[in-house]
Amino acid sequence: MQADLEFEYPHKLEKMLVKADVVELASKEEEKIQFAAFAKDAEEARRRVLTYEEYFQLDPTKDGHIRPPKKSQGSSKGDTTYEQYLRDRLSENMFANDLMELEYKFWESAEDKRERIQKMWIGLKKKNALGGEDMRSTAEQVKLNQDITDRLRKLRWRVD
Image 1 (tube, one colour):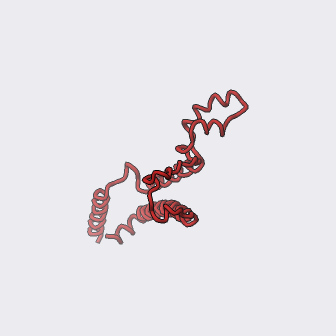
Image 2: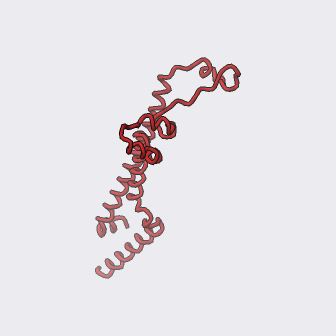
Image 3: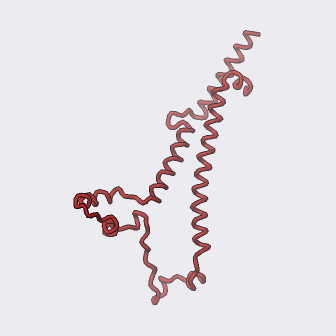
């Protein structure tokens, strides 16, 4: 059956191989991103110097004399307050400052933007390789392959 399909429909087989390669490429890219995040966390953990409480796994919030650590201000949108955003992007132009409130709603850091675009790209490549919503189900594809094989066998039987 496979030989019949390869002989009669080499372009379809080639298309299936290309789709499989694209899915594999998208999966490898996703693994790279996950490994990069893991490696970054591991490197930060390696460089970090443990305090007495962290080394002995003591909970500082249970001890009354130790205050819980404050959340540090980061570059992510979730870590940046509106007032801090205004201070960082304050302009001499009065009209530009009027648009700051609207701009803050749609602002994202470069790191957030890169992560969002990478996820979109991987999802798009997987969807395109698999066929998206119009993709045939496995049962439909098997039925189609069997139908093609049956027709080829009937045709060859008539020719012979």
